[in-house]
Amino acid sequence: QLPRAFQAWRASGGQGSPRSVTGVSAMEWLKKKMDYCRPGPGAAVGLYYLASMMFMHFVSTFGYERTPKSPPLPDVVFELLPAAESSFYPTDIVTTSLLFLVIFLSIKQGRSSLVCLRGLMFTYALLLNMRTLTISVTNLPVPNTTGPCRDEFPDVHVLGRLKTTLIYTFALGFRVPGVFQCGDLIFSGHTTYIWLMTLHCIRVWRKVYPNELLYHPKWLLVAWCSFGTLCIVMWRQHYSVDVILGFFLTFFVWHALQYKVELLWMKKSSRTVLDEILLWVFGSGNYLQPALPQIVDLQAAPKASPLHCTELTALGPILEVDSGVC
Image (cartoon, rainbow, N blue to C red; front, side):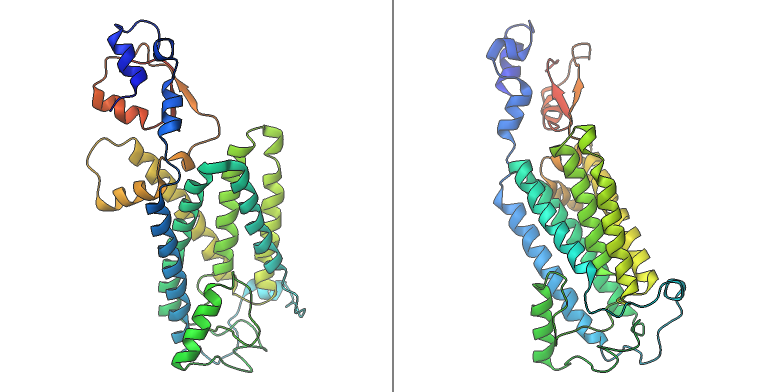
């Protein structure tokens, strides 16, 4: 149904604006109607993420036996950067700091952060599905010359596989002493995590702090995450190609999903099942839009049908209708 503000405005003969008739603007009506806390999409995305993570780690255990015992492959970055010998892994600090930054921005953003987090988890789960495919079809020699997967190998029995799967599903990317993985190289999961969280934080930061002066810290965040990515190669956890593929795939999937959902919200023709799933997951589309809504004056626009008005008002995060033709 159309907002009461528009109904009352039409009943008055189109005099003034919807606010002057009812005291409630279309944007206020939209904000009240936006349901950020729908349990259905959130629970479904959470289960999809958990299942994707567990399946990826379980599939990776079957690559242990196929991991070549040959020396590391030639790598240009390996030749330029010496291997780090320290047991301290700086990338763990980077990933942990990004997690706390996401939590902080979610608190600052309020209820609408639920839509953002839903989109973040869905995108990450989709990338995990891609990584499951790549690590199951191709196995490379481990990039280090000593340590796990060179001096000792994982437990390949059924209980050992299940133990590894459960531990690394909830390990948040940390290395667990005595439990390790081999063969999960193409592409780097840590690189995917780092840059996906970075893209999420930059976008949400713009919504929480629209002031341009507060937007400059994004370069510090990019530098910090670049350091964490470089450490992945220096500590010989991945080849350079694993990191490069993880970086570009993350950027491509992130932006492709955003543009796809944004176009779907403005699409009037029929949608596919996949389109409906994306709209169901991303909710109102509020995740995709900049911090400040675009003000659209519809006073001079031609008369619109009630159906078109309903579609227009559904784009609340995109359009703020101050006065219109509905």
